[in-house]
Image (cartoon, rainbow, N blue to C red; front, top):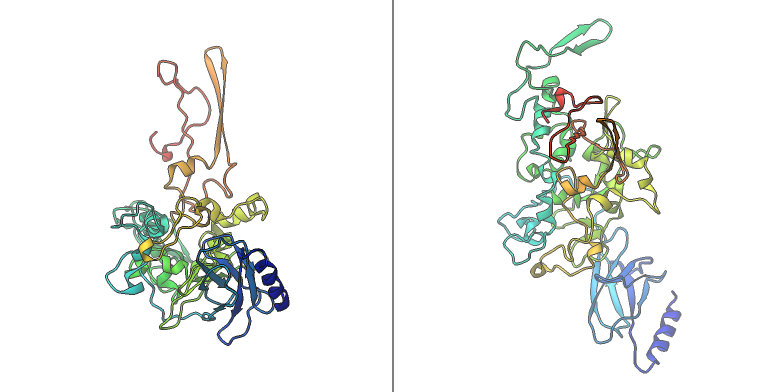
Length: 452
């Protein structure tokens, strides 16, 4: 929109009996250069526009007599805002650029509350309702119930990494044989000795591997192959902490397959923007979070954001592939599909994500995503993942029962991700008196499936 057109618009609106309900201004950078294409918004609303090639913007249809906070954002800049009211014509929003490089010396902020000042208190100081009168579950409260907060302490992961059972009993070290043709190779375990399962450390006792790249990513960003995830402390022991996720800037995928490259899990396929000393940086899915050193990041609303830790190939063997399964499904359709976040971080559960006394604003619930990351620990969520049908036919004194399960509500396989997961269908048939009927034929659950 040209300057002349802006002036004409103001004149026309001002002539309507004084019912002027718009405001206008300009978006510039630190050097005073106009910023075109900036998203300008009345904070927490759908009232938005883009700045023109001269950085000019006009917002209309605003209630008279009210004050507003108008925000602006453009790629490469922090979100900045300014106080305004209808009728203001010379609003100037000066955007400040954020760092274009990652700072490996940055110290991660804790997620849970820590004694201290400012941001050092941890994310919970503003994003948890513990100890407050607020009954809404805020992001940190939800995260504490989520598997991501437990990834460093997951007993299944620890047992697989160390080669132990859940009580800490460890299998003997892996035995190796040698071959003139193939060199060293692992031998089957000696079952005459106590055996509690396989483990990375049994096979590779002198290395740490890249397991920490997903399970303790805050510790492994700088050293992805040199971290034992079972020995981390501090923020790293929080699993996947809040600060880590909101420092992710981009995901590095193979341009042909659109998948993470083989043997490049977690931090090995992420790009970060840890801020320089004296500054902060938070990337999120909203373009009007201001004031503060926050910026909008579209990648946080895309399934690709989840890919590095939910698709992994080791030694040409696919281990985790929920992202790859989604990529091959109808759910990836841009018009009719759903992202990982749509299902696992549903919106509509809260109308604010920070405490009011800490600056939290009331927003449309559909713009706030849950941080509980719904998954295998959520019974109702899992029950809605598939549809089960039954069909029974009476033939003399026998009943022929057919049970089918359809994966019709999920964008990936069921079960998916961890190869330790299995689905067991347990069917019991009783008569009208509650007496269990005897199964005469058909598949049964094997002994290794447990006692049912």
